[in-house]
Length: 227
Ligand code: PCA
Image 1 (tube, rainbow, N blue to C red):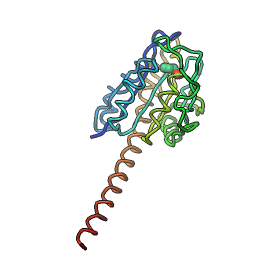
Image 2 (image 1 turned 120 degrees about the vertical axis):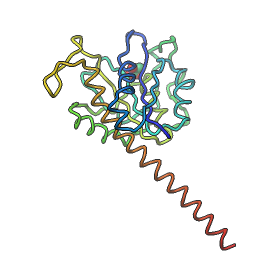
Image 3 (image 1 turned 90 degrees about the horizontal axis):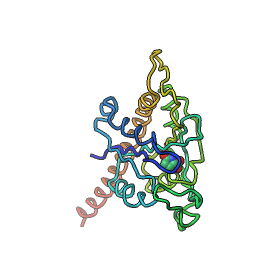
Image 4 (image 1 turned 90 degrees about the vertical axis):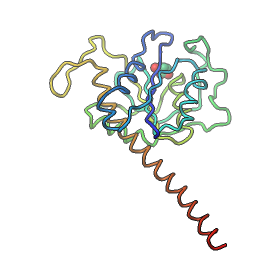
């Protein structure tokens, strides 16, 4: 059975402890999410290196996940942001965790200028239902988050990228029931609702692909009975 894939990132220059990797792991092991999905999602914490897109992200995408929920940190944002597009551009200024910068200005010189995620809108609605006032964004930057999103959107899987701010220093916030909770826990719970919505879209996509392949099979069968 195809599973949901959750990704986060490891450290990079200026961010020695990346909360997105921790949040991805926390979300992937959330018992409630396993219950909602009916399976334990896969989790991939990527090295923040351009090379990791080829060596780690591409093979995970080739295993045909049901859907992909991607998480990265954007230290200057104040709210969780739902990214609706990735652009075919890469920074040549900011080195990755291995000291490399983008070699060209385009991620894929033959590719489209941008890729949109149709799932961004329903995912933002899901986060809001879960009590998280996430903001929309059309700018995932020109660094690894944008590059990984551009790659993941290529094959038409339901994919959404969520940028999180740096968790506040106090690290605790009051939840709906008035309890003080670590911010990452609150985000993980809201992200579970986003994961549910993505997985539903993934199942609908898989079912329609299955139906289309059944139609083709039926058509072949009709031809061969007549012959
Ligand atoms: N944030 C960076 C890359 C890894 C991460 O967590 C970005 O916004 O591109």
